[in-house]
Length: 116
Image (cartoon, rainbow, N blue to C red; front, side, top):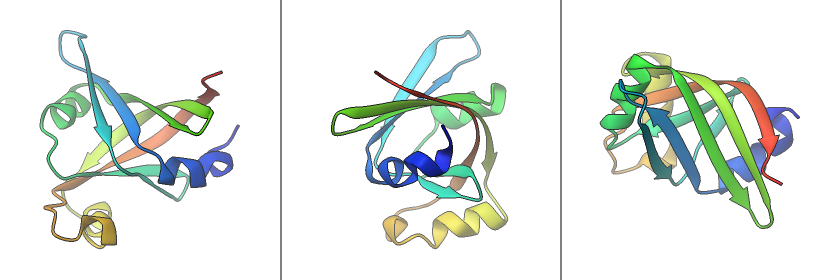
């Protein structure tokens, strides 16, 4: 399965984002949206603290989302940007109007699996 096959569903879903801390304890948050650009998933950092710290220490990330009766798990490797092209991209998103858009998490997809 490729990212393009689930792009529309992913961009419309609420998404659970899981990272791990320095002691390998899980940390999960929910986000309202993500964007798929250049075969990457882009998530805006508006108010994340622990998630960003975790990504800086361990770039591997897992996303889970569902739309109707279909669900998917995406495992990937993330990179955090607080300047440059990706920061400009998230600042320009209409969804971020009135929000701080402090940075962008850019995820290279390593694996996509259906939940059922």
